[in-house]
Amino acid sequence: MLNKLSNKLTITLLSLLLALSAIFITFTINSLPSFLQEVQQNLNLNLANNIVKEKKLLINKQVNNKALNSVFMGLMLVNPMIEVYLIDADGKIMAYSAPENTVLRDNINLDPVKKLLKDSSSLPITGNDPRQIDSNKVFSVAEIKQNNNLQGYLYIILASQAFDSIFNLIESSYIFRLWLVSIAISIFFTSIAGILILRHVTRRLHFLNHAIKTFKRNNFKKSIRLSRLFNNKSGDEIDQLGQSFNEMSDRITQQVIKLEHNDTSRREMVANVSHDLRTPLASLQGYLETLLLKQDTLTHEENTSYLNTALQHSNHLKKLISELFELSTLENNDTELQIEAFSMSELVQDVTQQFKLKAQHKEINITAKFPEEQAFVSGDISLIQRLLENLIENAIKYTPSGGKIDITILTQNDTVTTSVSDNGEGISSADLPFIFDRFYRADKQRQTEGTGLGLAIVKRILQLHNSKIDVSSIPSCGTTLSFHLPFA
Image (cartoon, rainbow, N blue to C red):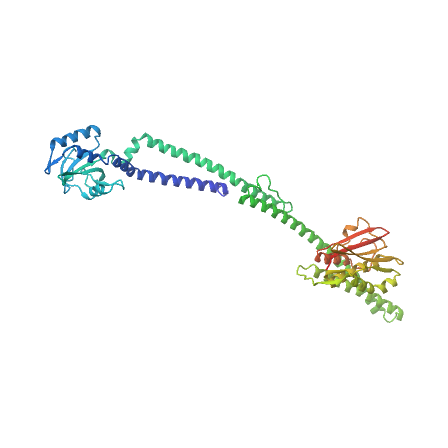
């Protein structure tokens, strides 16, 4: 499948190898003639000079045929591909070793000759080939002098027509064919090695892609672990990607589970709110309709009783709506706390006074125990006051007549612990984990005047203060709720 990354990389690698190989072979073939010419010219650079030193080829600008024939014969025996030309000072060909009627030029351009004599560091330098009108070949040259006067030049062509075609050389060269085969084998094994390396590198990406698809099929509810192939120690980019995916899958799984839980809680809350709003509304509507229908037949005492009952349901409805709004405000992520230092002892004393009459009406004794020194804490005083009000109101609600409520403040290390204890009904171990949920009531058969939101508000206030509430309870003996705040 061409859409796979490993296949795309493999095709790209093979294409690059073939393209580079084609470029290399083309460059080698095109540069091989120049290389051979350079080698040949460099090896025979002093050939003409050595001959001139040994033989007097020109005497008074006249050809010494005897010496020249000796040179021709000697070079033909040593290397038949060499062609020797004797030219005068103006470049005119005076004699040569080539067969008759094969020389097509009468003179030689002296510019390459003078260039080679002056500087031989930039080889190859080519000059005219007398046997061809438009062809140049490498040569060896030497000046012929007599009494320091230039008589002419010995001009030797080093490559004859046997080397005119480089392809003839390639076809006749076993080493060159072996070199081409070696390149082909190298390309083949390099391609195989490259493909295996690419497969090894992209294998982790393949597993990562498979893991993501599996994660998606599981509806992001089950996190994926990539520990078998992803090594933390190597730390390359693919390993880092795998580790990031592990962390991301854990986070997404947690968020999905949390969203589902929140959605379930939202549905339950809507159902509970609907139920808790419908009950006081129905009662309120019933009493008001009764008053309208029987207003002429009801006594003053009955009329007052109905109105008080309707007002009681109206107040309960108002309180429920108010606490729902309060809890919604607290759960808003933009909630800002007004942190300040205040005395917990004074705050407990003030809140306790608010509930004195209500406790006396129910014959409940409220006592508060404070430390010898003022316990100053850091927090939002208005929210902590609301927290204490909910805890004390909840304790009064579930403490029977004649019971007691103890509020205790303890200081330890850098923490101030405030506890509210009662000797009421207590909470069973089955209900204990859920008492801070919205609208949860331990005794579902018994209707109380509460809204079921008080302890949920307490929990959220402490979360905003980076704290939590501890609860311990023994059925029929009582309950203690404690929270902790840092020293100011």
